View 1 (cartoon, rainbow, N blue to C red):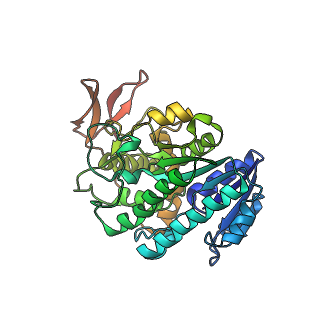
View 2 (view 1 turned 30 degrees about the vertical axis):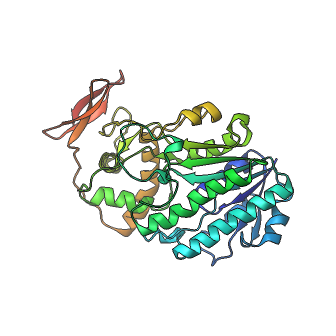
View 3 (view 1 turned 45 degrees about the vertical axis):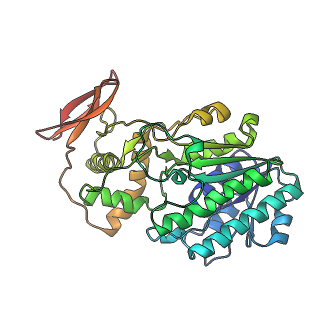
Length: 364
């Protein structure tokens, strides 16, 4: 099968393309001409056997020519302007709208002419905003416009996402489309991972109200994309994709800090779990399970350990780290069928015992 992929030099795109090539699939990728970075993502794609075409998604003739012969389109490319992630940023709000909406329109038209079987678009769970909720967010709960969204950068990012979802629903379903609203994707070498891990290890706990998130490991993000290719019931659906574990932002940073301490001390993690309180799911995954058969396969603790191990060499090379052992201030405890935080004293740290419950121990 031949796949056409946009955004192949991005974090999710690189992992998706590598997976497809490992399965022996043919891949064509259109990438924007840019000054070569080191390591060069285009060279990495070429080494994998990807047919790489440098060009612009607004170039209708180029897109027509490169989509022809493909059976599936993965549209992952997205121009954004995020000051905290300059490596993936570019352009003003108007530039983002023009590039993203124009690219979507060009791809839809080319896909129709090429007769592809499925068009898969990566949207975002940020489309629900960041309001606190008491029940999991379903696909129909998303913003219909950016009215009421706080923050110019977020509004600039979401406006074309919302409009693109609407465009797909109106201008397809033939070929079939699948829109996946991905939660925050994390994993080794993710954009901003080094910065986040460094902040967790060196910075104080945030005083801002914690936001709970069901983070999605990169392996599970790729899994959801590949499932969307062949599942017939997924046709013309918008589907939430997220991990199975929902934790607050402060608990997440505490977990990063604690795991980093164990890694630096050379202590095995088996039997020792970071202390964070599991919270109610933020995103409803009913459609993901029903239409894709999707279940997250990477436990959060395993994914965080993998991400931290990849980030620590860069952190050690760039900044001195505190040498003292960090001691968590709480551990989760079962209460009324859910979880709550309970304080720890005396340098205690939480661990999961062999029965699967949580106990306490002492950090040396």
